[in-house]
Length: 113
Length: 114
Image 1 (cartoon, chains in turn purple, red):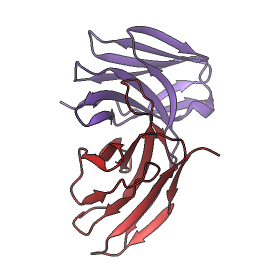
Image 2 (image 1 turned 90 degrees about the vertical axis):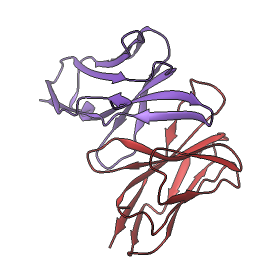
Image 3 (image 1 turned 60 degrees about the horizontal axis):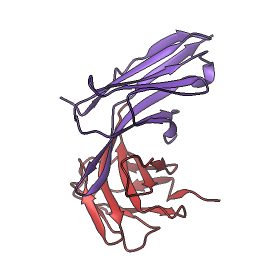
Image 4 (image 1 turned 60 degrees about the vertical axis):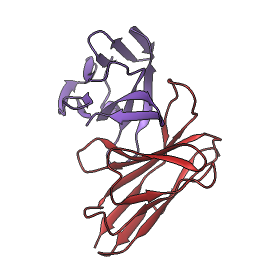
């Protein structure tokens, strides 16, 4: 089982709709969770971080965390064509060697006009 | 401007050569990381370092080497032992010491074997 799993997509949504991106992780001691957006050929940029169970909202983005189910999601409201990108879920684990951030393979999102 | 600088942005390597990718940060971050990304794939951790003069192997360290002689610098050498080095390499840094630290990335370096 992969440490962090995401559907590769592509996930297609019409402009203005809600996009829902999902991620599961295998390590129960995972402590913090991140969503990054990556445009083709560019480096990832941080969108959201979440550390506690529940929802965290930032503008059009909402991250949801359920540690019991080992599940983290990202909702994008009022999706725009500029949201078209690959979204990477990342899970941070504190190891003896320090913090280790493990990424999923990413979900490609396409927002259609 | 504060940030993470990777160089070169594009690098071509001949078979059997070692090459070194530079990564410098002026964010005063303790921790630094190297990731590799293959087309259509996620990021895989090569090496990471929490403090100067100490570093840990990640998930795919074979064929790579690093050093951390200064807090702001974490160069990655891709050795000839790395049989399939063509990829996008990303350096990152974070403030160490807590479980919630956020990682920030440089702009990446494209390495191609010719």
